[in-house]
Image (cartoon, rainbow, N blue to C red; front, side):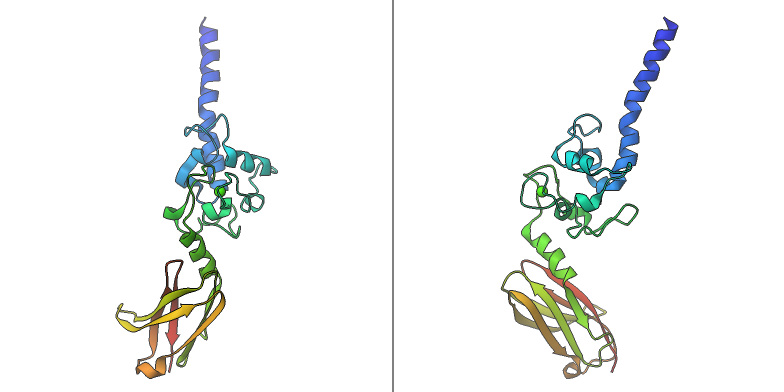
Length: 214
Ligand SMILES: [Ca+2]
């Protein structure tokens, strides 16, 4: 009887410790995995057992005991129109195991739940920010901002100094495709230093640092 009890205890411990081991092992193998922990891949939020649709995609990618995020990010597991990478804040699949979590944690959505999806603006924001550049650095006066927009939209262009004071504010039209704006800081009689440019509309919010050196 004692032997049976010990045996049952060992089996029980093995069964119950499995989800914890799984969690430690797997949650860190997808970007922002800690946010939803075991629920990312398992129907039971405690982990273990059946996998959800995203969990099945992840499972199918595993090679050599590791999740292959490069094979997972571009798939839309829950069929809500947004890829797993867009939902977990790594739309271009740049993240890999061991790197810091990408994007903004509060914008993470559930890649297994078609009712949970990113807003168009958060996807656009990531896109525009990864396709924008400010140059030259440092600038002697003329500052150029180049970016790609997927929507024609009236936008607000602002420049702040490092104390947060608004120095320039103007409306500009973002057109579909490549956009370029130039500002001449020499017209503003500013001192050399660090300034911040913000270009925003309902789809995106570009923030760039300007180094102005007369
Ligand atoms: Ca999705």
